Length: 364
Ligand code: ASP
Image (tube, rainbow, N blue to C red; front, side, top):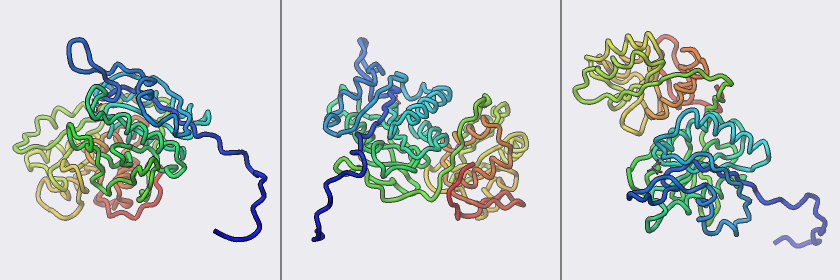
């Protein structure tokens, strides 16, 4: 305590009004209830989902609710997400301090990254859901939603883009992955860990990413098809050959970015016809650039024109490639954007290989 003259009683600013958070319900397990034939399906309205949250009335946060979709995560589409992006923008422009999305966890790592790419404003967009539906003991939806609302209402999460809040952890949309089919701790960030935690109802940010890539949706996005083919033992290239009608392709290679030598020629032809991004199927770590030197190694594939996904996992890489192609970016721009978004800043023109990160803020 500092001794001295008492502070004057007069207020120089108006009292801070209650933070306003807009909650969009999209469905998912958090909004599911029993069906007459057994099992659960998304049926609860966003109002019902919010009404089930204990402690919200005492939080001092004003919550506005929008029943946006009632579908399982698997049925969400790029069109749904484009419409949601517009609706988010409208709410923020009207004065909301933050946004919460409730949805199925099955696609949360993809949708959150799509929202993150489009989000150029400082207010947080927080995505959450549940692993245990509301009919089960220990349903995790209410706790996750309350934590998400606290995170969205906080000034401390400004500038972090889209976040996924789950099991009291705060994850960057660009890093989070669903790693378990049933665990309530399914969402993890293998590269770098969570950005922070919810402690006693407050978001505590411990790590801030060094940069974000944002690519707002163009007014007239192109309809594009981006494939994802995972390399498997004994791969004969059958699924790669089937990808010729795609506009772009992500290959989830073995380890640091390897494929069997027998598919190298197919990939070379594909990379001449469309952007082909090389990611790792391992789920953590980065594709390498110049360590292995056999046919089908990462250095061989990058020399043949494939684009490194860096630290982006195959699902994130597909989302980024989809946005870039839908927005009409050319090969050079796609390559440069992947170098930044993948955690690498510099791509050597001769080889197309990415050299390790020194990036700052990245806006494509
Ligand atoms: N298991 C999923 C969920 O967490 C189902 C879905 O994605 O809708 O919501």
